[in-house]
Amino acid sequence: MKRIVLTCLSILLIPVAWQLLSWQMAQPQLIPSFPDLIRALLRLVYSPGFLVSIGTTCLRACVGLLLSLAAASITAFLLNRSEGIRLLFMPWLSLLRSVPVISFILLALIFLNPEMIPLLIAFLTMYPLLTENLLKGLMNRRDSWKMLARQFHLNAWNRLFQINYPQLKPYLFSGLASAVGFGWRAIIMGEVLSQCVDGIGKRMKEAQVFIDVPELIAWTLVAIVLSWLTDKLISRLSDWQPSVRYRHSAVELQAVSLQPNDICLTDVSYSYGVHHMNIILKAGKIYVLSAPSGQGKTTLLQLLNGTLKPTGGEITGLPQQTANLFQEPTLLPQLTAKENIMLGGAAYYDRAILEQEALRLLAAFQLEEQAGMYPAALSYGQQQRVALARALLFPAGLLLLDEPFNGLDAELRQLVARFLVAWQQEKQATVVFSSHHADEIKAMNAEVIAL
Image (cartoon, rainbow, N blue to C red; front, top):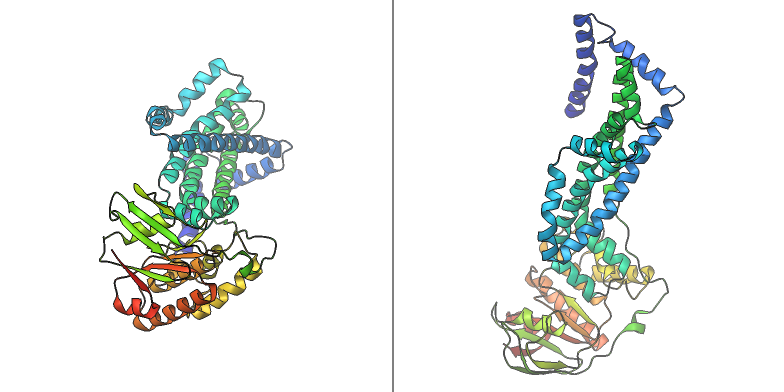
């Protein structure tokens, strides 16, 4: 409430200060009174060409923004793919940002049609800002989210809007806010100097030529309001988050279940943690990788799910699909607990089946009250159970669990272990999990693979 009052007082001080200045100067032609400004603004709003002038400038701004965003997206993608191209191109971006806008305008006045100048200035102003922000977003994407998308076979829509877009969004809208702020000023400046056929800048120049100060200030107020409305629109757009897309046709859970095969590791090695390993994982059994931290448990699990490739030896019998619980929960922050679970089967089941199964798993893991909560509001143990439920919804004959009991107290460990054993017996899946706690190994009735 205090903030609103102070904001209103600050706004009210502007007309008061202007009116006091007008009285002090006593030159109404140069410093008109505040009522005269209001009358000039009303005349402007009801004048025949008002909407045309606004529409022309807005059209230039929209076209310039769309062109800049498209070019920036392509450029950022290419720069992110190649370090060589990035090193070659970045100085040019810095140069574009450093050159004063007025220099671009004066050069453009020599070579270009006046009607093209505001659009060009908009592009040159917004393009480098958007490119740099999008490039930062692309370079800071999380590998764990990329692995999640690959392991759960997310479709193109979900990869774009659930994996990539949420990571790029802060950088994208920060860039848009800055670019549009600079872009508005640059476009109007370009219209003023290039003397286009129409536009806000054109009308401001005409008012200046005829020393019509009230109209000049009125057009300035219009430009400020349009810039403010654009900022609000960008802010509203930043709240938009597309929903997850699920398979449209109804498929029973059992219809896409995959029967496991025996998996054979022959003299398998990796650069760290795994050396000349020979193991046979029999189909339909539970195995535990038992070793102290840093001894290759996670590495072996990533070799089994295909994230890593062995540097020596071979692995045969791997299924096309594996269900995974990663070392960290890796929940998507824009989705609720229930939606994160449903994402695990989005490529194979329709929404109704997934919702029913997600609610069943939430109840089994004592998470009914957390179904509609976002990951930030969940404890680590709750996030771990949500991630485990997500893995169980993915159809696969091999279930790989990296420290599945992390963050759980003794009672919850027993509850989760009993559920996993019952689930494995029902599905006849092969389960491989990592642990170095005897009580977890005993509860899972697992065959130990010591590393």
